[in-house]
Image 1 (tube, each protein chain N blue to C red):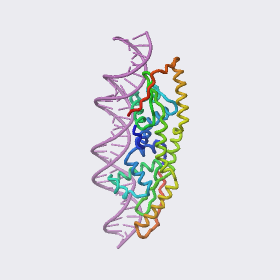
Image 2: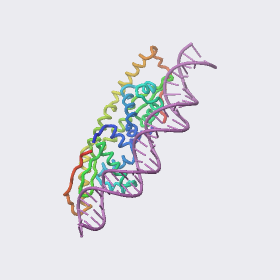
Image 3: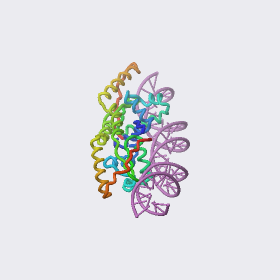
Image 4: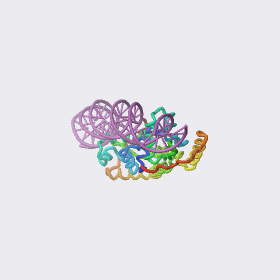
Length: 121
Length: 121
DNA sequence: TTTGTTGGTAAGTAATAAATTACCAATGCG
DNA sequence: CGCATTGGTAATTTATTACTTACCAACAAA
């Protein structure tokens, strides 16, 4: 369990895996039960769970021959913490101001003329 | 810009793209300048930026022939909000309790015997 | 208009990742 | 022990995606 930020994002980037994660988060479950509801094979579920586990997003406990997977909140918290850095809109405003300053420095004359937003797509 | 959660996670799941995102977040920049620092081609940077834009994580403004990309905090906030749901450790505890209850329901006798954590990997 | 600069798009390739089937290990029960 | 249940691993195939080169569009300056 390295639990780097990239691992976490990559783990939740796949739709099927994210669905499995949400299901496990809602209520701990086993590989077999999960495979029954997600129309992917059991090995596929097992592999998805391993990716989630490596990302620190789920944890598992062996119970007899079965194995119960559950949410691991700490991995989620790590991702949340990573995003905090960018969420603060004040920081964004600061960065934008810094850019304006640099743009002015790059070209001696800051021709702030043809400036147009691009919102589509 | 659909900005679904999956798009955002997938966007930050790639290491190169995440590096570009962090660079843009720190200070708005253009495609050319970014391509100069990331030893990938200019089209690659352009494509990465499009993915980030579709995920609602960056926005761009045309300035003359150039185009300045900057952080879009709202996309980040959306991802943060998604994670909030799982971060709350109290929720996890609740889910775990619910599972214990269901496990007991599944098998009439709740043989809570061979129960072992798996931490490695 | 011509020329240079900046970037997005197209098309193709190479690498990665998600899925499958088949097999094996471990546990529990008769 | 023999047998069933559960799930992880191996090996392969398929699909996706990241990247490249080549080309084209928009704008600025001469």
